[in-house]
Image (tube, rainbow, N blue to C red; front, side):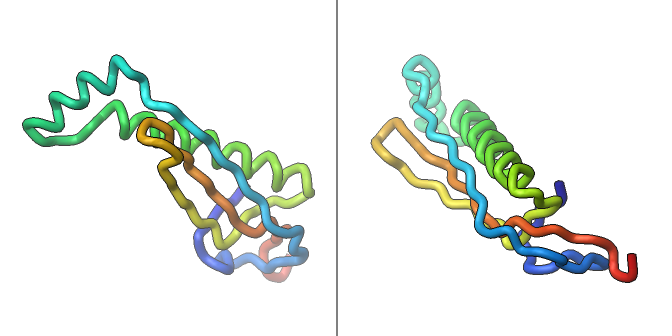
Length: 108
């Protein structure tokens, strides 16, 4: 599955538009890791546990979007966008969406 943020894919023509596809993942922070990250916050630096949590959430959201596109018969997704939101102080959502399309190389 080709997934891009652009409206087109160089060298490819869009044969069919299947519609909007999306995926999301809602994650809660681990209380034990939160305590360790609080100490990191005092001295500065990356909050690696949170970075990992968001990376996992993005991957899961992308996988869900890809499965939805595949079910529609698409072989690519164009114009994808990510959004994140805090649902509560310890719960975050990652949301991804785009347009499922069928593509082929120009002239094929």
